[in-house]
Image (cartoon, rainbow over all chains, first blue to last red; front, side, top):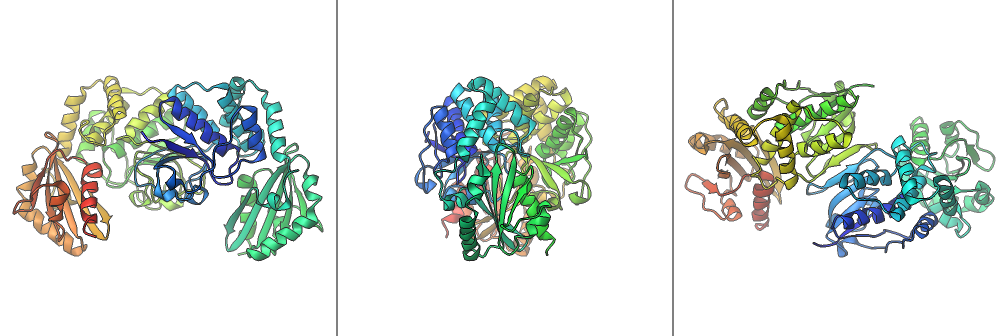
Length: 312
Length: 312
């Protein structure tokens, strides 16, 4: 039987990279040849987790159709987030925790999605269902994914199932969840090797809200001032991007992983509309503190979507 | 919490109806209020199974958005096979064994698809995962679904998992699988109360193959001559449909459930192309025996698709 490739989304994060490695391990354990690959370089947080538990970063692939005939997607399903050439290979399985959109197959497949905070939480169940034991280093990767996606259980995307899975995996991995988790988040929040351009593009997603074009970029930081002290230079770069891409709003969110708040910098002609969205006042530098806001998916996107809808 | 509705596809078959009843039972057993409903009248086979195990046919709904806010789909996912108004309700779960297409959600959901022959086979796993015991009458319904979708394990869509699940359910239901299964299939193959129009529409699906429009209709029979003796009248009706709907091919398949062969009647301007598809000669009445052919999905559609592709 030919080898199947397992991979997560582009701009890979810790859940995407570790879930590919973990699910390829599970497949191999039940006699199916599988290889974890990646669609981009791993970030500092993921690198920390891989090193801690003794794994290499998966090799990066280009057009997937020149690599394999069959693939398994983890942590995503939408075509535009997946590998180039995805329409020319057969997707035999998907393990995911996102909405389903822009996804279609010609044949029946194994598709497992659950509305939980992290792919690793679903993988933890599948190990049990298949009766495969989770080794300590694999448990460490899964634990890292839950800590990352849930910001140590602080994100509103985190469910009771994610917490229960993390506690089981902590036991198997033999680490202290809080200590290790904070160290990993801090490694990811270490922005010292990042250029300002990196900060803006590291985790930026474009959204269409009504008739407006909005980019929301997010970075984690231990001290938000490390980033916001460079506000003037950031503002120049963002204004350039707003102009070049005809954006109505660029919303840059720096999330404080210790206090679980965010500081936002809003630019573009709709920047002031963010005040109503979060019920805050932006200062003369277009900056505001968003108390308790950590999740783009559950907090920032819905609030901005609603505020901009009122303009129409 | 508001009640969630559970339903299968339009033109309901035994797997679709029983899976809705069975999954609603499982939901209720774990404290979630759920009601099984149907998108059309049950067929004779399903009626036989429901009566045998003491169930009523689910009530039939129209536009789903006037009935509920949240729904669970079983045995299908494609929008055109689902309830009217489906785009105005939230799909919270899908349990299915078909390809994924024309399906999109705004939010994460529970989606469980596996490439097996029957939805009931997946439900059997979910009962175990949830630790809920399967009562005898519910097991009877699940067994009926597997017998129906697999034609008593004779269909090429049937997997080892389907057979294993059926054997477990036979034990719980306390029936003899072969005896009960054959009686149920015979009840479904009793066409005595059907008009010729019924026979052609009971289970007809339209396909686009290359640039051609093809309808493949299928009925099960104990004696294929009961149907084929009325060939002349059938031919008139089919020719009318070919003309009205500008079909290139109408392929009518009568499947012999005792011998697991089919007899096909092919009409339309591409009728003779079916000879190459199945490597058979159609007689002067446009009829041919297709030895060992029982599955539209796995045998008829691929053979015709390939033969028609050669014309382009």
